[in-house]
Length: 148
Length: 337
Figure 1 (cartoon, rainbow over the protein chains, first blue to last red):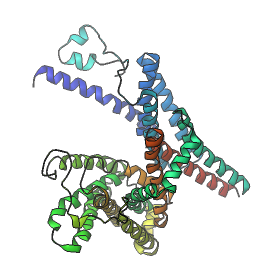
Figure 2 (cartoon, rainbow over the protein chains, first blue to last red; figure 1 turned 180 degrees about the vertical axis):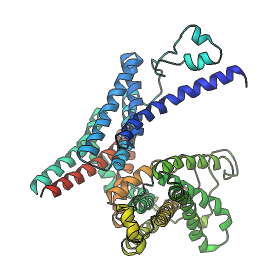
Figure 3 (cartoon, rainbow over the protein chains, first blue to last red; figure 1 turned 60 degrees about the vertical axis):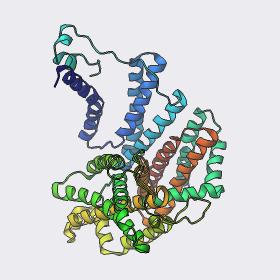
């Protein structure tokens, strides 16, 4: 395989693994405390919407990140209140949050941004000078954005 | 008692208030919105017949969910099993030509076989390798979704080969319309019959009792001489078969061919339908109608008030949470008195 192609493939693979990786990290925390968070999909959807909305309104990807993290905590807080204080079934509650997240993200996206894709302020790839300039390893490991 | 009634009333009010807030956020009047939703779905035959059309697959799939959940088997793969049933039924449909009235039962049986196979695999993985059925069924949904995308672009594509959809099933395999002016089809009888049969079967048979016992405790079941592994596999076979039947009925009654996204959203809603019926088969058709009202009503709101359709998911999510909260409050009340 050509080097450029391989570099692109590995860099994209690593980049796309980030969202699942971070979510899996969160799920691992929940599972360690003996709870199962089935609603993570719904929270991720809402987080994605809030990140886009926050980035658009504040003009900075950091604003989007902050809003998404905050929103995720609020939703997870409500979910925890149901399962821990009200002692509802964790799996059923989780499914309710998947459905709710599907609705919140789809509905709010359509009323706030008209449901059309728009270009957003995004994180730039890092430039670590000589490290990024290395062949293959450079773009794959040192040319990613700061979240990775 | 009045304290309990008061708190449950508050939960109900909150369940109505939260979706109303989102309606107001979109700049619409919530009272008018609820009026349109109920007026169209319950006040017009056009609307109500569509509610019943939606309730048919939700009932069948919800029954499948109930069978599994009663045994403590969390089968989240209803949508995948529905697709598996629909694909196998449509694939078998050309072989059934010229069999007369006998073709339709065989077609529905093919659907049940497809779904049962999809469910049975999960049962085998769980009992043989103690795989977690929640994860397996969630992942299998994607497998069957991809299977559908492939077959309607490959082996089962329409003869013209233009659009990503299958050929039309034979006329003898279509479920007849009950009323020429609406989309309501004979699958209604299949759904009602399935609910009645399952209610009797799950509450009167040894299998149903065994399922309830393993749902509460596998230890107790073993002590009582019930073999959980066999029941888990049988439960998932039956659960999958009902999902597959839902798929075959949906194709025979509404779509008449396989298409992308024909099952979109049914899997999640069916879980909610089964849970809100307390996993009691006789109640499932009614909760299916409730979720049918949300679905058809949201369509009407989008057409008449241009409210975005995902509102339906907000309403559904809030309704499930309200239901859970009401039950939790009741349980707390029971403990105290």
